[in-house]
Length: 113
Image (cartoon, rainbow, N blue to C red; front, side):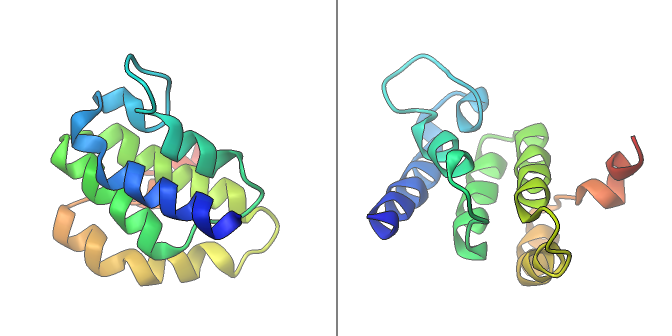
C-alpha cells in the first residue's frame, strides 16, 4: 500500500507542470493538483531522494524556487532527530541541486531564522 502511495506521489510531482505553482504543497484549484506532495508530507517517513528529485524538477519547470526550498525544509523536518538522514538526502540530491540552481535552506541561512 505504501509503495503504491509513493508511486502516486512521484507521478503527481512529475505532473506538476499542469498544477499551479502553489499546488505542490498547498491546496490549489483543480482535482488532485496538491494531492501528491500533501499526501507524501502526511506520511511518517522521509521520501526517497528520487521522489524529492522529481518534485524539485517540477518546481524548476514551474520556476517556483520557494516551493523547492520548502520541499527541502520539509525533508529536514521529517528527518527529525535522525541527524544522518538529511545529509544523506542532500548528498544524493547535490547533482540535481547544482543542475537546477537550487540552494539548500542552510546555504540560504534559513536554518538560523
